[in-house]
Length: 538
Image 1 (cartoon, rainbow, N blue to C red):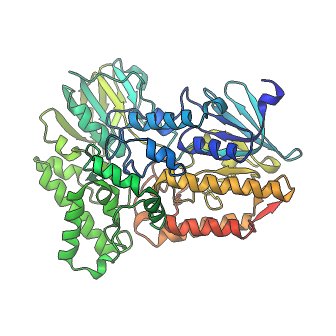
Image 2 (tube, rainbow, N blue to C red):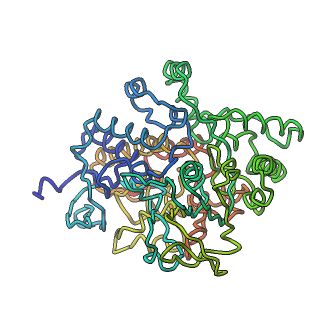
Image 3 (cartoon, helix red, strand yellow):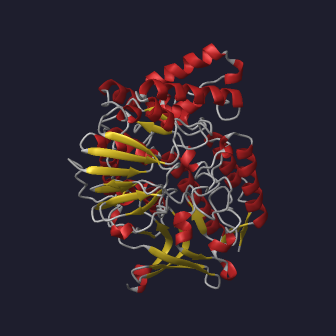
């Protein structure tokens, strides 16, 4: 590269929803920007995750950019919850409309990012051998990016098709007439199982931990619904910002404790039947104390357990599919289309991988610890991610005085507001640990973070300074606040990836801010309007 081609005001890492909006917003503010993307296409999560049944669990009228009324009016979603190919098409449409591709470098996986204190510059190197410089670095690396490595021996011995849902072949996979193993029953496995079962000769689903899943009620987009949303987009987007997760989901206004058991039951049933935003994730907003009051949570959990028992015909299978050791909300709520009904098919078998874990793959299938063997033509790994911190720690990030991010986070992922890191000047995170992130409408939260970051960079420029670094005290106080807020709920009582419990050796701290998106927006706005007093400018 020539010098002019590698010197920028801002380097953005990642070209998903976050990276693309960051590019647009920062470029519009007059900065030179380069986006570095590891893949050979844009889209982030929606580029990599192409597995059967992949779709968003927030209605597409809301899981979309709000910054451009023109884009909102031009794009038409075909379904209430759009499938992955349509979301990826939307992302590409936005990139083309805003002419973003010219500033995106594909096949550029960041290997390291080092802060040069003397020159107040970030030196960013890629695995492909490029070195780029920038005054500021924005990490748009996503919350669920780095897939876990399976604790299964002899992966290379299987002679059939072995696929990860998180790195799905672009040409797809033909399951017709195949014996298929699906390993994992988180959100991905719950979405994939019904689709695979429709064509496979036989599907074995290997489950370690059952999850609570609710029906999406997905359907083709009603023209009247689409028209109504477009006519009222501005007001509805504004109303969504006042909610706990930046989403309109008909949230209840009263506590479940103040309702009678009969009233609660009626409300739960109404949401189960409704579909759309009121059901699915919206079920968790039926009452204001769903994840704080044990008796209300117990009732909601029991309601779902009874639905599973009523749906799944075989009582043994129904019992295995039923979560018993944690309450609803303790893990990310799943949203499905005919997941439980799938186990009524004669070509689907559920295997309890907690009682008898998978030990190894064989040439023709897999073997459990008990010695039981299963023959398969295709094995699908849907085993989850190193959430929130995985992508950042995969890079070699070095701040002031040689401080490594891995060292900084050895006792938990401390950030200030999920946006900045003490000791790492001029670096910003989008939806980082300590922000509402995965428990909010991610696209709306992305816009809020990018707008805040852009304004902060403008503040630095206007001050005549060249570095901004958050104080250790502010970072430590926010980390404590995030965990204290979580401790006031029932959610941390479960071993979930919110706590890093799915990654051996990962520090156990809650990584998502549970104070609500509206409250969080007030906090970050106050930090900016107060002149960024928790930061040091030099």
